[in-house]
Amino acid sequence: MKIKVCGLRDKSNIKELMALPLDYVGFIFYSKSARYVGDDFDAEITKMIPLHIRKVGVFVNEAAEKILTLAKKYQLDVIQLHGDESPEDCQQIKDSGIEVFKAFQLNEDFQFERLEAYHKACDYFLFDTKSDSYGGSGEKFNWEILKKYKGETPFFLSGGIGIDDVEAVKAFQHSKLFGLDVNSGFERSPAVKNVVLVEEFLKSVRKKKMSNNKYAVNERGYYGQFGGAYIPELLRANVDELRENYLKIINSEKFQKDYKRLLDTYVGRPTPLTKVANLSKRFGTNIYLKREDLTHTGAHKINNTVGQILIAKYMGKTRIIAETGAGQHGVATATVCALFGLECIVYMGALDIERQAPNVARMKMLGAKVVPAISGNQTLKDATNEAIRDWIANPHSFYLIGSVVGPHPYPDMVTRLQSIISKEIREQLTKETGNPNPNYVIACVGGGSNAAGAFYHYLDEEDVKLVAVEASGLGVNSGETAATITIGDIGFIHGSKTMLMHDEDGQITEPYSISAGLDYPGVGPLHAHLAETGRAQFLSVTDQEALDAAMVLAQSEGIIPALESAHALAALEQMTFRKDDVVVVNLSGRGDKDMETYMKEINNL
Ligand SMILES: O=C(O)c1ccccc1NCC(=O)[C@H](O)[C@H](O)COP(=O)(O)O
Image (tube, rainbow, N blue to C red):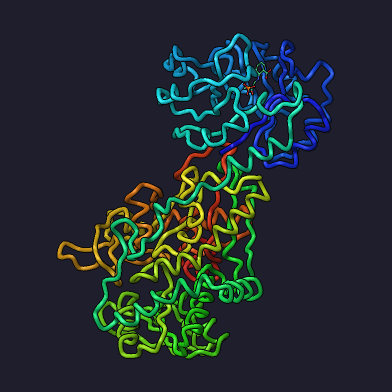
């Protein structure tokens, strides 16, 4: 929720307010207002305002020429029009490249049809109370009226909002509510705000709503209708042992201390949140990359293997088994087994062993035994079957799964271990913009572990749009695809009920994507639930679109992404953003491992 404090003038008061996480500050350029900045308002005052706080000039029936002159002088980012300005007046300001807020004074008789002519010409509306003055009346209006507002332009709620309105504001819901505009409710005297009260208001309004756990796993291991533990009887004891222990261990102080130490000193966390200027310019918004590519081993996978190896140790396990497709999870598992001196057996399809020679060599160098799966298509699905067989035969082993898939508790356990990603994003954005919540979080989805981690702390923050990007390979209808949510159905795979791709006989189909990490015929049950409830939007990206996006990032920002992450980047091309949106793309891995593919697929490399 964006917060705008309007009606400022006093330099020392403004300086104090600048320390608060505000989004907008407003200056009244209407001479009849008690908060009028005055004819000799010092332009140095607006210059000292940090760039992330946007400066709004408030005008009433003023000539466009004068507005634009003052906008230049005071470096205003936004013009807020409070008089009888027409859509054409708004458009004239907008055409000069400045954002426009149009204020409307509402009462029960307000005709919302009036707004239709303004949508194109305004970036935001501001709904204030009908009064004899043009604004700053300190009076509230009946917010229920806004149920009638069905327009597309987001709005600020305004009019007499004060510290006593925190609960009402939090309870008020409207899909187009963008922010709150406050003014006289926080004044000591005209144009001088009570900084302590403003700070208290910001904290209370933004305090995380008590999680309603709508998207969390329930005690039976389900996300809505998805999840569960559909496993052979012979595996039951192994899975139950893990289910009974994982939360106790993860929540223990000792685990938290050991896990944090490893994340900080071995994995290299926190990973940076990089604002990418050239990409931001290209998409006309503010794009940040969460740099999982900078972790040890070069991808987010290590967050999970470091956590699971600790859980295995605490459970007294000495033998680790894992399955791997392209070898990334195998390498991350072999890495932590080497670190802890544990035996490591990695099952890998015989065909994948042939295709992924460097990763096979890495695993061997790290001391792991790589066992070929020679059944079926000799790929990931078959490797998983072999790993499960091994686990049944060797119950003292720990099966270390690499994504938010498999029987409960794996999806929840892996999600929690990857949630460090969104925990850090929140902390980093708070420092950077004053608000922990971005407008969008975008991540690629194969099984879905990097997306689960990037989404986790935002699941109940409905103002944050979650975008999951699947690999559509050669196209969603080509038969050569891995876009499970887009074309799949409900079914059972690797011990859980979820969405998967299958043929007419119900057989799971072989997925295809240029990106090995997205080449999975199912998806984690959390993601199936996010898709079903509409909490996350699912987009799909072809091989070619991902390759193009990788080139754009490499050549505009000097970062070569993993092919998986390139899918998340390519989704930007399918979306439209506002100038002041904050968009976080989870850059799940670095591109070194994909150089052979890039060299083969991109001309002149
Ligand atoms: O604040 C003023 O004096 C004013 C005068 C003329 C036009 C607009 C004005 N204020 C604009 C605002 O953005 C106010 O914050 C908004 O009207 C709500 O004010 P309040 O009821 O005091 O919270």
